[in-house]
Amino acid sequence: MNTKVRKYLIEAARQKGKFVYYSDVVTECGLKFNLRNTNGQKQLNQILDDISAFEDKASRPLLSAMAIYKDVRKNDHGDGFYYMAEKLGKGNARKLKRDLFGFAEAEACRVFWQKEENYNSHKDDF
Image 1 (cartoon, rainbow, N blue to C red):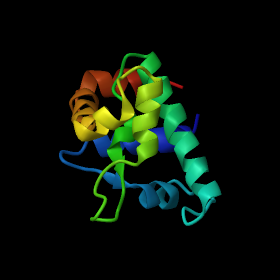
Image 2 (cartoon, one colour; image 1 turned 60 degrees about the horizontal axis):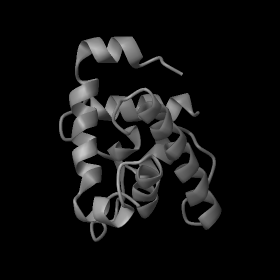
Image 3 (cartoon, helix red, strand yellow; image 1 turned 30 degrees about the vertical axis):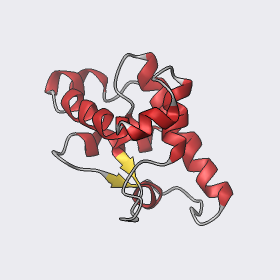
Image 4 (cartoon, rainbow, N blue to C red; image 1 turned 90 degrees about the vertical axis):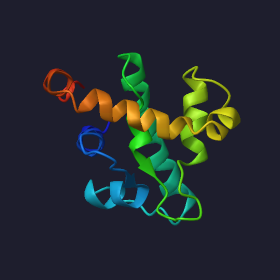
């Protein structure tokens, strides 16, 4: 699991109303791949999936919900987020997307990570 990306997403969750863009994750975390090609997108998707699977296993909200598209026409989480959530047993990917599960999960992340006790107890879990 990429701990730098996990910590970056945790810090985003600690800020009220904050989201990060997929491209910001790549830039700010020093990831060396290009999101303009399929391989780079798959690499980021795998990192985000690993982090959310780790959080889900610990009964915490899916941290990758903090990352969304920069493009205002999409203004949502990528399909990969919803397919990953489906794999983790959260429901049908299309229904999750329709029901804005990603935004509800981002809010659950904020509630969890803004609590100092949770932050201090789990920010360094690996």
